[in-house]
Image (cartoon, rainbow, N blue to C red; front, side, top):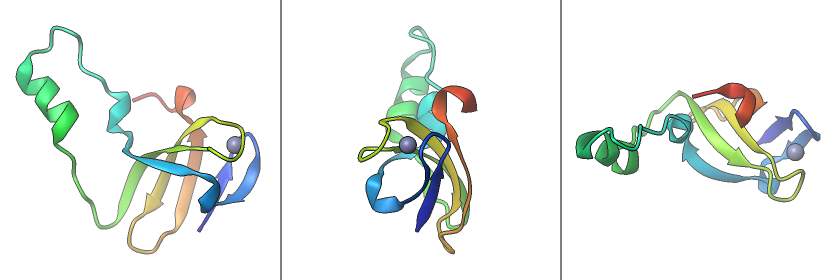
Length: 87
Ligand SMILES: [Zn+2]
């Protein structure tokens, strides 16, 4: 699988480390309550199909990316730097 890092260009996915769903960017407020924090920390979907994930360009620029891809076909639709992607 190839990922086009917005800072480095197209690279092999082995240069990256996947950290899971991009919902990690939507952190609850500190006073959001136990249910919100429980869901944030422990509940994740495991979609078969299109998804957004956080990837770290470990062997490259060190940037966090939000990668939109299909978990079935492994097609990569888009990769953007996380601070530009928002939640
Ligand atoms: Zn990079």
